[in-house]
Image 1 (cartoon, rainbow, N blue to C red):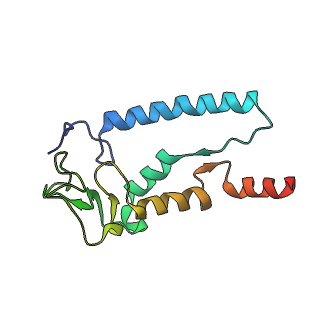
Image 2 (cartoon, one colour; image 1 turned 135 degrees about the horizontal axis):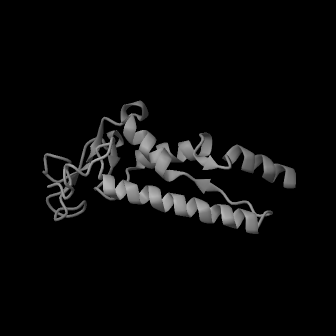
Image 3 (tube, rainbow, N blue to C red; image 1 turned 45 degrees about the vertical axis):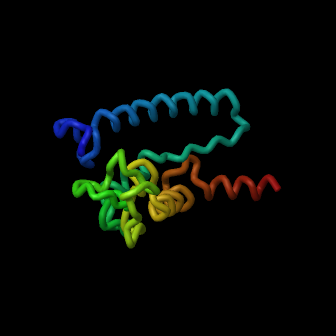
Length: 144
């Protein structure tokens, strides 16, 4: 059962109005973050760009090992995406799938361990942490 209108989809096949709100919230958050950095120039404030990392995976899930990016790994019997608000994981008749590492979502709300691992790698080793963790570690080593 889909709660979103079909005409409210973005290029990732996600609910456009919700993603637009996420983008707006991110812009406000980044502006506030810049204000804090100006106000406290000696503080180290790191920003993890979750939205960009997540949408990168959603746009090309196969390259991150996900075979079923828009289904939940907790099987409820709904053929469209395995999500049923009345049969969440841990309640009958829901059951875990045999290979949750192929899925991004566990139950329609929470990410799988595999997705959390991918995002963590993107933050620690990629360009989704501002400043990058390498810079933060180097700065920490110079401080003693």
